[in-house]
Length: 91
Image (tube, rainbow, N blue to C red; front, side):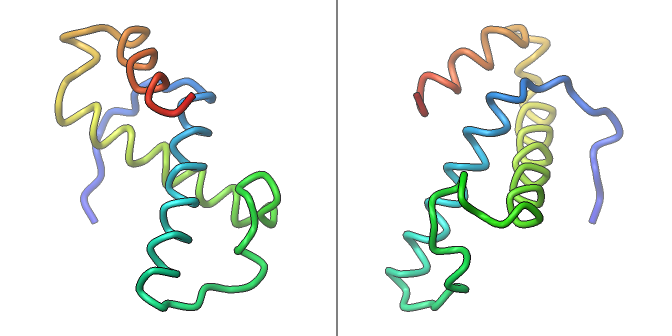
């Protein structure tokens, strides 16, 4: 898989909120599609096993780098405004 050459500075709060959102949506859609996820993962994000949570945070950061980098949002709007706008959707 091709990765972005530059890594953006993304706030830990934003990475956390996106990871939490992804976990919740994955569990929601899995249930809807009758996909049985592991019992240990059918918990709130904060209660996930440490390794699982770490993976979700890494995926979240990669996703944000991909989206923000490809849209060049930082250069257009600035990092702080981008983070504030996205976080408003989750808090």
